[in-house]
Image (cartoon, rainbow, N blue to C red; front, side, top):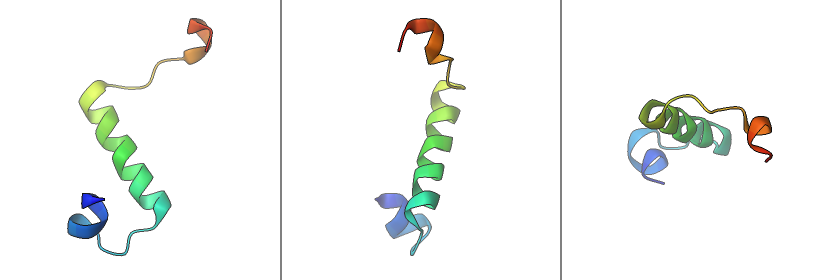
Length: 39
């Protein structure tokens, strides 16, 4: 929620989720293919 309140007031749900996922990818690297892990 800090993204909406501080960085981009009035952001939509989609914008917020995209920003969070982008940050996760920056911190952890690209998502792997879950198919090969049986998920």
